[in-house]
Length: 126
Length: 110
Image (cartoon, rainbow over all chains, first blue to last red):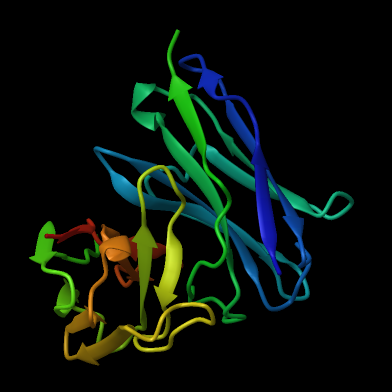
């Protein structure tokens, strides 16, 4: 079955870059029938979709308007994983970050998220 | 921006039926999905495409859709069903090809 394993630091200083990685087992980041997402959760913002990357003969990315100027999601085919970079973080970016697969194969309409990674609490503080 | 609206809380006694609603203007045109989240855990998909149940999810979980409202129904609620439940659908605001989540409903089993 598909499993997602997240890694990355739990503490980031304000104005710096948050970086997380999601390693995939049981599927391929290059799959033509899945999309790979980052989602975060905080008490103030609830569950918030951040963005996705997916391959349909070429690579595509979609990002949430709220973070579009600061976010990059990249696939790494050599390691079968994908990453999140969020620049210029502030304490408002403190949240639990999740990676998740969308197995719906639809394009460009998003589908559902299954499975999810284990979550990483990222605190933005000096 | 597009929003999905859920009641903050629902309470039921064991063995009763819990119904959790989610409202959104685009739900007649877009599928809805439901997740269960227990404290300290990642969300788990319990319903997809309005009413489909993933393998491994108990039959007491079901979903339905009517107009701008979708409903998650848990029949014969058990103590282990106490959790937060979230709906999700496609962002229909036209600003992105992303997803939106409802604010979540805390299910309390009395």
